[in-house]
Image 1 (cartoon, one colour):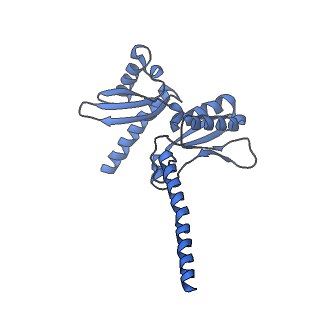
Image 2 (image 1 turned 90 degrees about the vertical axis):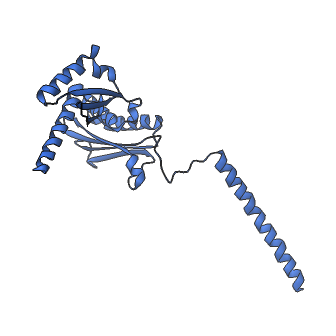
Length: 229
């Protein structure tokens, strides 16, 4: 019984998240998280366009709160807005943006859209990025296309800091699946080496030491040869 309650609870929570994303518009919402407090439900909406989400004088937030109380039977939903400073470094917003561009311009320009988006991500300071498109694409060679640039770890601890997201584009030929992976600029990588002035000085000093060692050995060997004679 406990398992069934847990599954139904998670289904209702997923329904709330999907409704908020659908109601506020595709490409505006990155993530919706729900925290349960003694006072009520705290719903945090991460978005790059807080003004459009809130609406004039908070009209959209008030309407959303009424629907959540009536349709989803939430006791006291409290909606908070979390602004995303760099939307180009958010995997969900990027994947949604690619989906919107494919729906608007057509799947024939999927290469141009992917390469341009990849360049924007790297220019924004990302250490690495990958865009994978699959589905009804105008190509005879493969049904899946992969576009990548920079450093992107897929296994081990560094892979945990990679931001991943998926989206779908409904084009005239059919549905195109989009998967985006971004390694943010502030990601901590254990095997990363930063070549700075201090490291260059150490390498230079080590090189000088290595040059001095053979000369000393040569002098020692010459002395030994003289003694033998």
